[in-house]
Length: 227
Image (cartoon, rainbow, N blue to C red; front, side):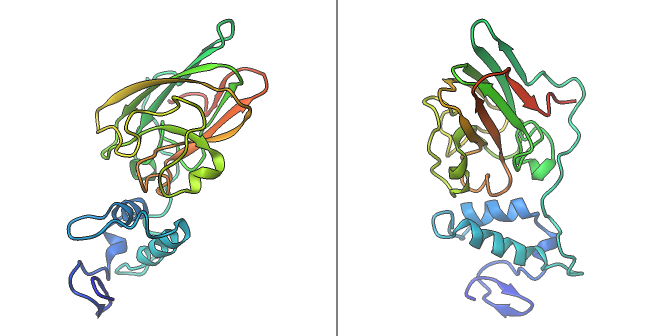
């Protein structure tokens, strides 16, 4: 009403959004809305997830040809050949090593772990195992990695830790493109959790997967490896 116009109605302080669906993908819109930009406030602490989704759905159909769904959720993209094994384990020492590559592919506009988001990748670890995570950011934006209770993935930001130490450093600001970190934690309680990027707006863009702690069995990752 005050800042943007659509189809000749609205304000003129901000860019005209009449054809914004041709210019930005859904994830890009979410990041812009939640994080703000030049002369635009951040709305991460103002809008609910449902409100953000409704707003993006409206903006996505503001295209030259009004084609619904432009910039919508992308399927997981093929991953590069020769990529590393993502999960290894040692049953005798009750340890597992997990590789996480943020922005590994262009899937979900780069908002993915190992090329997968929106819960497509499921990591299962037996209870009591110590997990060492090797995290690297191949994406354009800063990204982080954190294990949070599954229900809390619906929060806009400030995700609680599921286990002590189960996060990269500075999870809200994230690790810059090209950066890497390691962290370690014990999967101490059986249950279903979420692996999230804790940078505000990135989960809403699809950057989350499933982390399960099982009563027994062997560590596993679905899909089992890149490539």
